Structure formats: structure tokens, C-alpha cells
Image 1 (cartoon, rainbow, N blue to C red):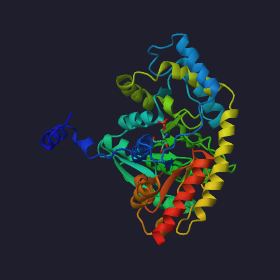
Image 2: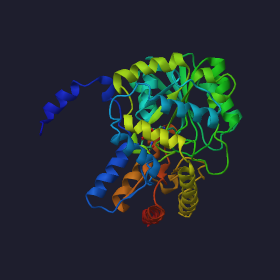
Image 3: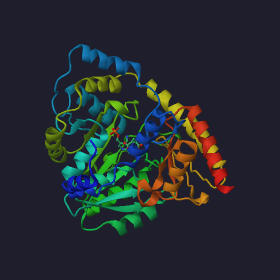
Image 4: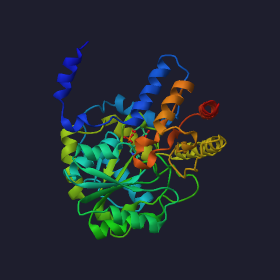
Length: 403
Ligand code: PMP
Ligand code: GLU
């Protein structure tokens, strides 16, 4: 319905103040815009969102269909169905070396993002501070802000040494520090944290008594043989860490919305109350499909990893061949994060103008916090043809800038 500008203003005035100041998700917005332009008939190379182009594995889809046919279409226990909680606990124990009681220390939610939101609501008071290692994924800071907490940033990149990290962290911690989020492999840089770097955070968390949320959603996507290490497994960390994970990336299941959080019962128990009041439970048949995904063969995931690795190598080479652009080799996840400052454009200008001129959708680095300006993020969860076409168009765009 057409509203007058006065009506619009009046309605906006009735919305909650903490939300009015909030920016939407840059990743989701660019992804939505790219899909809208595509639907309007424009030739778009969509390198924006981290959404695998691979279909979900057939055995998982079959399990969901079977579940629907069996009439498994009602509320489930709020925490999750026992078979899925057990499968997650088994995965965490065997792959990550950390043990959790399925009936007490894990909650299944509709997406890891939902679990992040719930964790922030459960843990953060107004005035608390949360530490992010920057650049960091776009939804951490807003979730803290919605809980009334402020975010402080520790700069971090592939070259950050243990000593530098320790010094920067020490300079950032305050008596109000409540929580730090560690994300390995990292979105957007692809950095995989070593045990030594994680130990710096673990030492600080124990000395200064803060909690750690360990976002491990990209744990499977590591390309050069480094191990994925969960900070929860380091000495003294289980009791102050929550693990955030899900099937979106590891099993190409973004649209199914299936994530989970695991941690000590006193923390998880508080989150369960919010989960009961907000989602009730994750979708019933999706949970049964998730059991098939976790307990079934993992060769499909292995195949996707090999495809991502080949794409990474080609894309990084193509980007580095463009004058004015420099791209470090991401060690994991499925994003390239090239430095575009040599083009003279800000990350927002670069992303906007690239979309207008060449129809290539990328996410501006500034959306990932203070460490992101000067960079753009390209998702290589995309076909080889699209990635090569994207690199060609980006080269033409940068060439035209210089002319
Ligand atoms: N953490 C990171 C770092 C992400 O990039 C995403 C986006 N998929 C999520 C969490 C949330 O994933 P989902 O809600 O799809 O489970
Ligand atoms: N996590 C993906 C990304 O960063 C999907 C969008 C979102 O959830 O932010 O692009």
C-alpha cells in the first residue's frame, strides 16, 4: 500500500530504537539484490553469498522426503530429536575431541545464525564488551548490539604472529570483556587459526575470565592440510567455550536451516529458554535429514572440498593477474578477499560500480568491520564458468577504471 512520507516516518518512530540504528546484513542484501537483478533478466555473475552451488547430497534429500512421507511433520523436542543430538555429540567427540551430553549440552536450531543470535541474547548484558578478530563475519556485531553489548576489534590477518596477537588482545581486554568470537576458518579471509594462535585467546580467556564462542561452520573447508582445531579442546577451555556449527556449508544445506550450539549446561540451559520462546524447534523432517547427513557417507563433502580447492587456486591466480589487485591465498572457507585499494576505489564504490558496470556481485569489505576496508569478498561457492567469467569482467572493470 502506498504510504505518505509522513505516515512512513510516524510508523518508523514506533519501532524499537535499538533496531532503528541497525544495518541489515550486507551479505544477505547483496545476495538478494543479485538474485533480483538476475530475475529481471540482467546477466549477473553472483559472487556475493556463501551459498554452495552444489545440490544437497541425494541421500540427505531422500531422508527428508521419507521423513515427510512418514508424517514426521510435527513439533519435535525443543532441543532437537535424540537421534540428531546423538549424531552431533558423536561428531564433536570423534572429529573435534570434545565431549558433550546430548540431552543437556547441545541445542539444534534453525541455522547457526539463529544460534548466534540466541547465544548473544543469553550471554550479553547491556554494557558488556565482545571481542571480534577483524575482519569478521557481518552478523556478529549486530547480534551483540541487539543484546545491548558493544564490540571491540582486534586486527588479525594471515601474517599476525602469536606475539602480536597477544599484545593486541591484552590492549583490548577490559573489565567489561564478556565474550570473544573466534571463527576458524574465517569468513571473509579464509584464515585457518593455528593451535598457537588459539592458545593466545585461551590464555587470555582464562586469565581474564571471559567466554569464547567458537564458530566452526567452515571447519570442513580447509585446503592445504592444516588441521581444524577447536578451541574448546584446549586445556581449561571446555568450561568457557560454546561451539557453533551447522550443516549449511559442510553438506551444502544452506536453505534447510540447520545449525547447533554445544557448551556447558549452565550456558546452554539459558539459551534453551530463548529457543523455546522463539523457534520452539528446528523443522522436524530437516532434523531427520541432518541425521542422514551426519551419519551417512561423507564422500560428497570430500568431493566438494576438492572442487573448492581447484576453484580457489584458479580464482586467486586470475585475481592476482589484474593490476591493482592483490589476493592472499585463503587457507579455508570459500571466499577470496582481495585487496582492491590499488584501484583507488573504496570497497563500497568498487562493489557498487562493479555491479552496475559489469553485473558482478561481490560484498564490500567494509561490511566485515574495521579490518575490511580496502577489500572485497568473492564467494567461490560458484561454478568454474561463473568464476572465470567473473574474473574476466573484474579485469575489464579495472582496466576501464585506468583508461
Ligand atoms: N557463521 C559464519 C561465519 C557464516 O558465514 C555463516 C553463514 N552461513 C553462519 C555462521 C551461519 O550459517 P547458517 O545460519 O546458514 O547455519
Ligand atoms: N554466511 C554467508 C555469507 O557470509 C551467507 C549469508 C549470511 O548468512 O551472512 O555470505
